[in-house]
Image: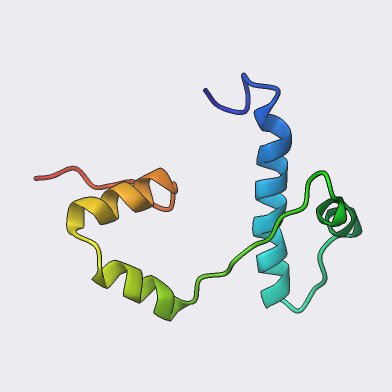
Length: 85
């Protein structure tokens, strides 16, 4: 079920998306939006983000088999696994 049909997933999806945008803004030298700073400072929500460096991705890839890499990136929706020919 996606966020479109599940009201409980909508706030979680918003927070995940905004966290992604925070990393993009960080690389552009911009600050996070004030509402996200306030939201993540709440005791009832909180959260943290981790940025994986290019070297970290290379290390992860080196330790994966082709099948596990496809599963990892497919589940993360980073890329669509290619069909075997």
